[in-house]
Length: 598
Image (tube, rainbow, N blue to C red; front, side, top):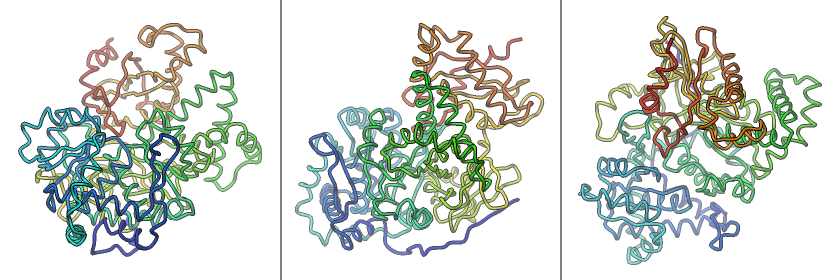
């Protein structure tokens, strides 16, 4: 059993809680800009100082206290990513309560389960549609006292409600929570089964951010550091960046609409961003397709290969002269435009939630955007490992953070131990006992390896390993990551468990398809062209490229293009854009059978 650990390099507080950062910021630098939110007139951004944020948080927290929210009560947040989400999160903590994030795309059934299981006493929702979903299930929620809505002036209502609460009473409530007390209850979106509530304490966040902001000092501590959050704050990945920004006084903005993200990035001009791999794939694929539509496809392809070669040269300590010369040309013609689209100041990005793939990692570093890929789960308060600006190995998820240990079990499963590992699942002892050993080792369910320098590589999910009829073990993630890198591929699932060979089902990217169709003189929808020879040839090339990453026995022998679109709304993807394999496998039963017809 292989094991690697990194010594703790910082002092993690053993008193206080997450609200102390807000109070400290206002005391030490009251005029510093800690947030920028969309201006009330819809034009540009309006700054929020540390003193102003403390005042707003305190006012809303007093309203929660006046409404009867007690220390330890659970308060649910159902909203898109916006400034008010962060404001309420800290207000809930100031009131001594526990935040229960709920994805704003959740169904009535999902909302009912989370509110009932958590025993939520209050809900703060975004708008009428979310309030209606709560109202539809409220009959079975005996603990629920209040439902407020951002769109119906929840912030103002709560602020007025708490006007008679004394500062001393709020301070007493704010300081109630210790590091061992629950800060948030995050329900795993999960690719299978009913969501489980992950209990994350103030200590979990304090440990995680104590080491992460120190290790990622170049992101958080540089002059003018800022980031724009556009991932759901219900996801632990975005949440930890939120808390990290508050802790380090890094200017934070919010963008709720992914479709309007590019204008927001150009206006906000972040110095770093965070995203899941699918976002980086879509940015690359969109740029590739637009270049092809403008007749510059060959130039873009050469620029991409040069960027990859340049980054690989950096790893070897020597970039060939020819590559350096080509890179200098493409830096002006191609790379600068891509970086300008992110606001022109972005030098780093943090990627998590799924494997990025070394090709994309090298491409982005080659154009001047270093992606620091990390790894973690909801149960581990986000990051367990991360690549650092000065300790980077593309294709891995980095080394364990200080104070964290990793162990590779005999079956290849990765186990971790550290101060960021959760306290267990809410009201679910059997699930806790299955995931968390008595000595603190957490079973991730992911399969991976650790090299001699401590860099971790994720190779698949333990429960998703395919075993062919011939007994060959195949990790589908390796092939799926390569397939999705093709501009025309939106989603895919690699299959073959118990079958004579490996195969794949592929869906087409609906943004890239019209450009491809126009370029190739095609008329018709995806549904009409699903068996088109040229479309099949394009996907065949993606399959051939994916097969380069595996042995012949693991390679994809057949594939089938589906006319469908898999999405979060239709239930095949989680909010972090991971494929729900069990759902998809149920829905594609007939297509799967067709792949293996003689």
